[in-house]
Image 1 (tube, rainbow, N blue to C red):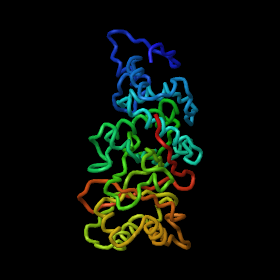
Image 2: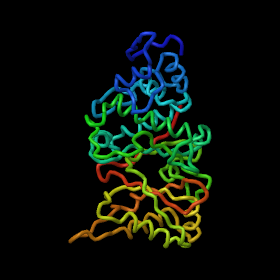
Image 3: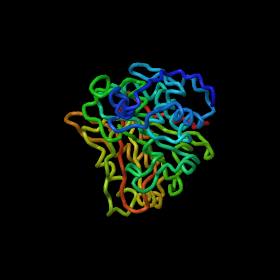
Image 4: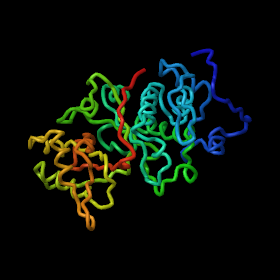
Length: 325
């Protein structure tokens, strides 16, 4: 990549200045220290893709900043990514800027939602993206830094600064980073990306405007109906936003549900039909359609838990994009 014609402005700082503090002073962080994006680091990051640095991937709302490959790479450096993570970050940006996702709304809403990235396909293993123990927690560089890069891009390029254009009433920890892999090897059903029309050999990222995960505990039910009834009672509340919802089913729960002959479609239909709740004088449906229930298997092999992640409702839809070099 020698001889790069840099598109972004370069800022020189004095020898006694602390680069990380300069990033804080310029508002380029998510509140945590970032890796200073020096030209040599950005050049190394660009080696992770075959795409040209000046290529425009998208304009990021609400300020509609230009997310070129170079600028994406800069933020990936700041997040702590390895160069081989860059294609995942680029694909995630292509997904969240697709019209159905409605990134402008997600960026400025008072809701707490944030882009959740779900990774499928061979790249999960190649990059060691966690889909098992502590899947929503700390400990995996790929999960932490890929999700963080997307957030930094939303802030640094899109201009969604908290209290300014990011008007979330609460927010949640996933607004630092929100990236997991599906645990395809233990799932009794086809992975999410195959359900969405991709091949098993393809790697994809699915983006979903997600609220904070809700833990659903059922260590006593030994039938599919028992577990799913617990799930339905947990999510069928008047305050639940209707629309898409992700159920992250643990391997133990998935094994029990599958053993009773439930397919992915069966789960979707069951949850849809059993999440009607009465709210004063009218009925409210927590999921508008069975396909609004997105099924993902992830988490460690021990523990009878399911996670429910509510979406933002009608203004946004999940999007899946292939990951390419």
